Image (cartoon, one colour):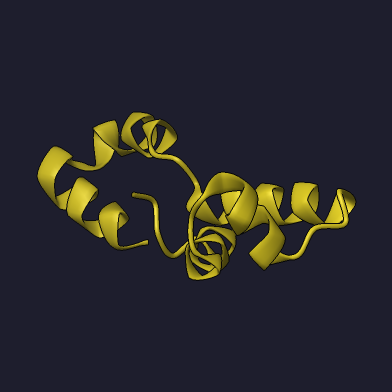
Length: 68
């Protein structure tokens, strides 16, 4: 995780544990999105259409690539 080394460097190792807990785990969130989507029997494209986003955005979310 890129933020981890930066966080430790910025805040020191004693505060790292607290700081790490404040970050979202985008891979876990992506896995949750994927699981819920497949439980509903939706493709990435179908979910994207319902949310009015691109299927590429859904793909990135599910892979934990994009968090914005």
